[in-house]
Length: 621
Image 1 (cartoon, one colour):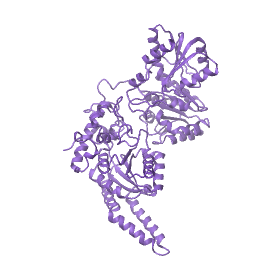
Image 2 (image 1 turned 135 degrees about the horizontal axis):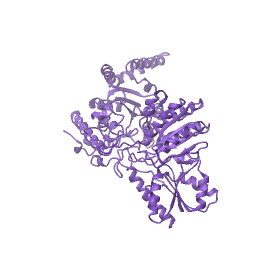
Image 3 (image 1 turned 45 degrees about the vertical axis):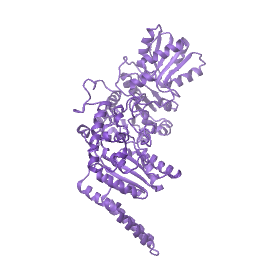
Image 4 (image 1 turned 180 degrees about the vertical axis):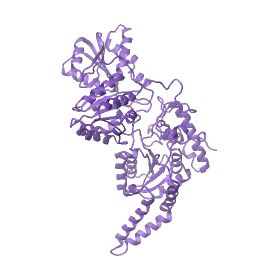
């Protein structure tokens, strides 16, 4: 019997029997379930690819051969097999191993991932780079059926088919079940279509037909079409064949012997190959099999029950839920309101909207650029589309925001969930760029609520406006700081009036700024605190008044410092010729690594203590 204790790297599994590898698969699942129950993470995707991962490392000569994991949320078995088993308890923790592939972490991680649908483009780029540099190795891209909804995946497929270079794409399909009859027939056809005898016969037949005078070429093309028609009767691979791929599948992605045999044959084929593997998301753990959506990305849980540990479940709503519930209520009175998501209905809180208005929710799949332009098209007809996308994923729709929405001044509302520090998912998921990439776009209003009540008010205001609006709000439990009065467009809220120092906070930095003012008071500093509410348009009147009545102004935001909220305030101070001392507390010029939100805010001085310390040094500097 073999277990992870016996594995220091993929070389330790090569040459093992299928029975031993099946034992290893069971052990990998136990380790993943146990580990993720403590750290949280992407459980169901990783449980679904255990056999695929073992087979890939068994057949390929990794790390010489390259595996590109699309998105990367299914990479835990890969990490366990490539020397990171003994550090698996640090998964997603500060300075621990990452929850996604990282080239800086291991030579087996051939490409950094975290956003979906990049694998095929990256893999074909590696193939071309390999050939340019005169190297020799295999490249495999592993992509899920969900990621195949993105245009980028098809752009990569199209280019790979055009280049006709050796590349293996494994389509991990966990949305289908295998029909026994079709599955058996598919296995039989795959053995024939990838076998040496068939390939030799196909090549020789084509050569004979092409050499027949005058009609040979036409007969050869007819024979190819006949072969396609026969395969199309039984296999769902005609699309991939038309794109230039040799399609193999569907195969049972949990049948180690079959996956290994298929990969070995695919390695011998010329040109791009697509292997269609059917898997079960969450396989091997009862609760994740029953509810793979919940266990796709999950916090710590009790293995025996699948539930959050006692006392940690919490009852307060997340900002996502506040948004989703309020939008659903507003849509009750306004039939023109529609909601759009890019495969993140639950994550963005739109499951509430779906329950009340199922015909007005549009899930476009992992296709953020399309979601934005689709919303723009709806807005031209008088609908009020609300596009709910995580801050980090909306980056993919940047051109569409400018060209299709803001240039035409269309009434589209962007709900930017997970804005600011996100936490354990690391640098690919931190929402720290949206203020910078949005605030300079003409016609766009950008706002950020200090708490749950203000999010509700801002959503209502956004839906009453006549142009494009973005509302950014954080990941996590919603707070209630104070009663929300009327939110007037472009107007800030004075929360605490002091003298000498004014702290201008935006969004979720308002709460720690208020707390910091209390800490400063204990040190003899009477600070003013302003909830700025609007990043664009700025409350210029408030800023001018503060600059005239205070010696020091300090902005606080969870965004990169370059081009952020602080930059906009500084620009205004420069225009008014103010000589007031100024400082901007924000994320420096770095990609923020993984860790808890509390750890990272403490690291970058964005908690109450850090804000107070920075302010104290500023006024005494």
